[in-house]
Amino acid sequence: MQEFTWRVGGPQGGGIETAATLFARAVAKGGWWVATKREYHSNIMGRHSYLDVRLSRKPVGAFREKVDFLVALDGETLARHLGEVRPGGALLYDPRALDLTVHKLPMLDHRAAEALAERFGKLDPSLKEVLQAYVEAGVQPLPYPFEEVADRIGGELGVPSLQARRTLNTIAVAASLRLLDFPLEPLLEALAHQFRGKVLELNQEVAKAVYREEVPRLPSQLSLNGYEPGRVYLTGAQAAALGKLAGGLRFQTYYPISPATDESVYLEAHTAFQGADVAVVQTEDEIAAVTMAIGAALTGARAATATSGPGFSLMAEGMGFAGMLEAPLVVTLYQRGGPSTGLPTRTEQGDLQFALRGGHGEYPRLVLASGDIEDAFLDAQKALAWAWRYQTVVVHLLDKFLASMAQSLPKEALKPLSLNGERRFPGREGRPEPFPRYAMAPDGISPFAPLGTPGSFYWMTSDEHDEVGHITEDPVVREAQMEKRMQKLQTARKEIPQEDQYTLFRDGEVLVLGFGTVKGTLLEALESLPGVGYLHLRLLWPFPEIAPLLEGKRLVTVEHNYSGQLADLVQQETLQRVHHRVVKYNGRPITLDEAVEALRAVLTKEAPERLVLRKGV
Image (cartoon, rainbow, N blue to C red):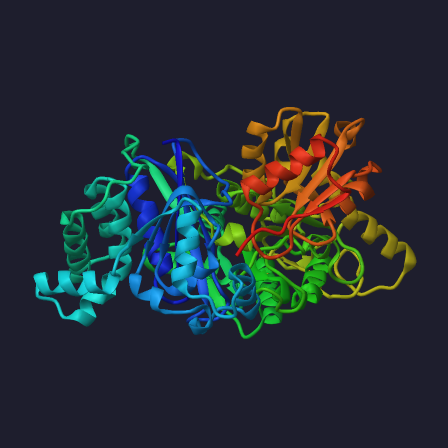
């Protein structure tokens, strides 16, 4: 077996993330490369959520449409994921759920219930009929009474039923791995990473008890894949947080908002327990978050704030303030479905144009998009370094898919970079004198003196100003200051290495362009698409000089938004027509199978100019 996908589904707040993390860590300790995709509902408890763990003998960063093994922790999972287990796959479920009908699933959406009613030709089909449809599709049913097993094992261990049932997620993972004939030891190691004390002892004893039971033999067997120490397993949000620490972050602000909060919460935990010299402040709103971060930057601290779409909207005025003050500020933007509160916990790439243009007036900003978890770590460092080098705002774009996706990586992928180049005035002795903070400079970068620098002072204002910060409306001074500020973009385009601006992974008559988390999917899709090339864009503003690479090619953009915002940007900046826009905007990430099917249609000239991908639960 070269690869395998395991899915667990159940109610939000029911611990399914713990189960998926446990499964992923166990197989990773068995030598497999893993990636985990999390799809969760925006309510706190009850609504349906699920996670996929894809494992492979080589590093993996994309997900398939159908899974090999589904664990249904409730009846709704049985109903929702009908048709999503491949023929020959397995379904582990609680037989008690078969007593229910579709309309007795209280959290099942009306649209999904109606679709099932139409499929089965009756108003309220039973879950027995749903199970039979799995069987007819070639899926092996594996009834497993989770709570009964918990009670029985609890009785053997002398543990009360209520306490034993708290291990249901461990039971589900252990039963899955036992059915796949996977060794017990990696699971015990994974449990030791997940739990402590008596909770660990109970869960390990429960896992051992599950492994002692006789189970049927499945066609798919999951053997060890060797073991290479030195791998880490982390999410995109955690990688961005660690990248900021490696880049010298000293001050981070945030107001809680999904999915950006995960990064700041991780930073708080890291600073509290690992001794990192970073202040993390939860503010009363996003306006306070951005202005407080600007204040910290003006004192000389490497500062950042993290938010998602609605919060980024509130930060627009503050970012303009930073642009006028030429303050080095990083804004980490985790994109999610919009507009308004939209889809709070679903992925999208709909904020690209807003990241480029959001706010009134013009000021130089850099926009950098991460394509995978390793990129998130590296780009967080670069964003901080560039903010200080060019004394301006850097918007670091991620999205919900990347934020909550987890992946195993080699430790050497998380190396701190040596990045500097800032121009900081060291101060001087004697009587303080006015400092030309906004002095003219051929490259647009004036010398910077943090507040409190000995021997110097200057004025700061949100209005236009002269070299020492005095307010002015003089047209000549206005032109000079505006031109100086905007010159930073040309300097950045010349100085930033090409590999940090874009990567041409493969050339082809059909050339796909993408940014952000389409990267992993498209790179794997290329393996079965001869004649298709991929140009991955990392620096989106100032826009890279890629026009020569596009000439004579049939151009395709692949992105998670409705209109094809990247296509508009490419056409605007290169005057090259994008022939096909492949888009998806239902909040679910593009799967490997969808990407291959869409690009094959492009190759055979069967694809329309705008191709919408619609898969996902």
